[in-house]
Amino acid sequence: MAKLSIVPKLTAGSVTLDQIPAEFVTEFEETWAALMETPNGEVRAEFEDKAERTSWLNMAKSYAEQRMNAQGESDKLKVRALPKRNLPENVAYLSITRDLPGNGAVNTHK
Image (cartoon, rainbow, N blue to C red; front, side, top):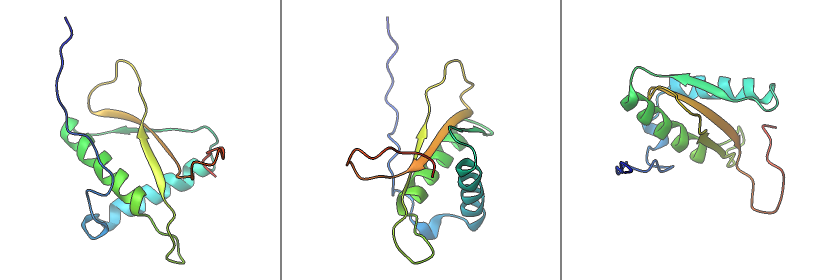
């Protein structure tokens, strides 16, 4: 028998920019810069517990959705938790990519 459980869906924008600490933004932007230099790279993140993992992912998705460039224009990114087998619940592998319009363009880190 399958064991089913309902979990809250992480929605982008549920944390406003003014609620996101500056340290988080700095760490996120440094990670994004490192990913741009590593084609096909992914991020491994380890947290204290499952609650911290969920909270961090929610904040990351929210920040990425509301991200702006230096000129004040939208520069959205997409944060996705990658499916990996047999990970502890406090570990996540992440993909961060540009948020491209649905016009068939190929999405890469750059």
